[in-house]
Image (cartoon, rainbow, N blue to C red; front, side, top):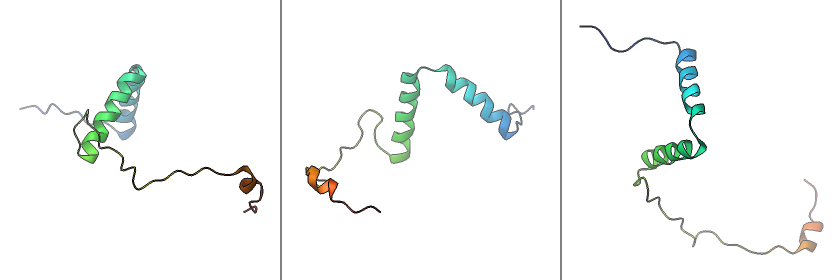
Length: 72
């Protein structure tokens, strides 16, 4: 029985994939990125987890405070 897998160098394999992904539209690449994120972080593909907004807070900055900052 013959093996269906062909051996490639790393350069050949990455080159073939790069050509394929460059041929896709940005929307298709975004859809693939969304799918890969859902696999990596274990959530349903079209239902990502919501950000917990109780952890983050926003505050306005006074322009005078920015002018008085010491250089780093």
